[in-house]
Length: 538
Image 1: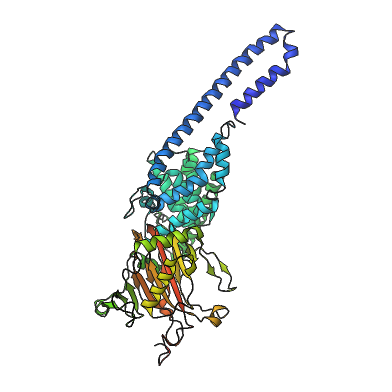
Image 2 (image 1 turned 120 degrees about the vertical axis):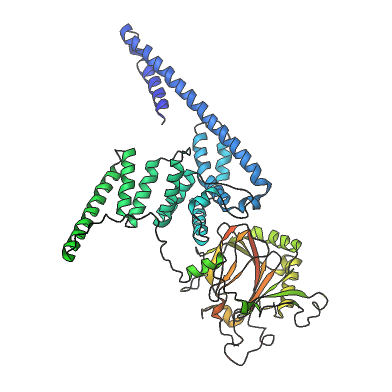
């Protein structure tokens, strides 16, 4: 209960409780004069609090009106900036809840009922955590420092947005709660920097320094941890945990000095050096993906192994699908993207109208994309695949059958045993880390009936302002999305053995909204359309 409200209720209670006693003594009644004065003061505090609350609500409403007016004018363009996407999730999960708590003080307002109903559709804590991790993923993949992300200085952005001290602090807390001290340090440092520059915020420096000093300690940087902890104590001398931490750090430093002295006496050296204090730039920890550096470099357009010699082997041509009657008059433009394994791009495969229709069909069915657990074979969600997908059948709309038929004509393969048309949309930081399209699991039921995934036909249904490339870490290729084009490659050699060079990835989308659709052709039904070669690797 608020202090002023508690006083208000207490005073009323005292007046009621002592009503039968005070009239017998004027001396006692004088106490009521002062009680009434206090009651008036608490009433004024209540009025001021209500006015302040209404002013806060009005300010929030005006700010949201301006923001939503801009965002609703071009939703996809607005959300193409990952900071906007993160802040939208954060607002709906955190900021609107704070407003709800503020408005809840006045139960006569119908806003609460509406907000309670709407809240069931709001992002959850898990969503906010996921959005924060997506920003960190972009930060790592594209080598963006926190200040660049905080300022919103990203290429190709139409709606610039920035992160506040509270936003940066929230990013740091998300990393901290995940045991990710590398990003904790980066984002708490950015929060502290913006705080030191005078940005207005409700987050205190003490809170920031508390997280930052401990995260720095986790990297073994004792001297900097002590420096940050001393700064914390200078702001809040009663901070119990900081005091005990400082004493612990000092003991560790003293122990280090003693060990150094012992080493000096053993080596019989008289040189004295100050303890080395790290600069605050810490190495990013290694993770589960062995080709992480190669993969992320390709996503940035670095390390692409397109040599002049290889370039000379790549050509453009008109493709008629081996004299397919449907393509003789109107062949497709075909461009070699890579020589071995052979990857080609086709132009003007889908019209804008077809793309919009397929997106319209897919949107209501989009669900979190899944992967198959390598041990159990069960489909599950995974952090290394961040997108939503749906599957379209030819009966859903004539345009689906038309697109399927076109892919069959271009490739010369049959769609009768192919999988349904998969449509995928990558959100903020959306990605699919290096993987194989063909199955390496003997327990897959489709292997017996339809065979393995012979080939991949990937349609790009949107341009992407930054990021979102399809990369092949094994041989250093990067293919960038172009709306209306499609890329095609074989996942299997003619012998049916998997071509392990085709391990590929969908890079995180830095700026933009990436839409793709794909068709996986299977072995069955294509035995004579793509017959076996003479060797295992033909």
